[in-house]
Length: 190
Image (cartoon, helix red, strand yellow):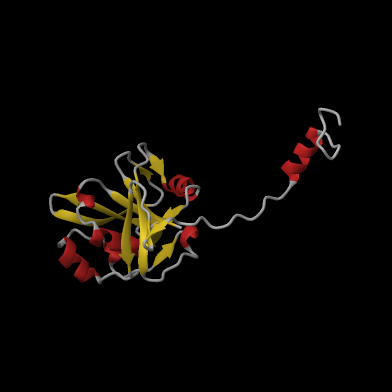
């Protein structure tokens, strides 16, 4: 056997070319480590029960205050982002990740980056459940959910949580915005 050949008598270069042309084997879904049937949470992750409901606009104003709720929550339809179309909406516990990109960002780039890490963007219904479980987080920084949008006056708008002089705010922002460095983005583990 020549030192530049495989045990089968083929050159290493030929074998490398064969490997490069092979279709990769299908990947198994990532298994989530658990302790006593609860998922193990990484830093920045939160376990929250989601029932996939949202109150009426009037009830939202009771919770957040009059003038602190965007009109996009007036009952108009929301569309899911393509990455969320086949998501599981069975009520139950979901693992959320609050991402600080530490730079100005854009919606599609954020979704693509987090998809590679095993997360999809949260929808408005998931964001509502998240803020019920963690109401004080939005007092620290603005939180954006990119997983669903409603048609606003000038384009698609997404749900945002924040804080202002009037208290907690359930707001909206343009999906196509360039997001400021101080925004956090809410994602859900796939």
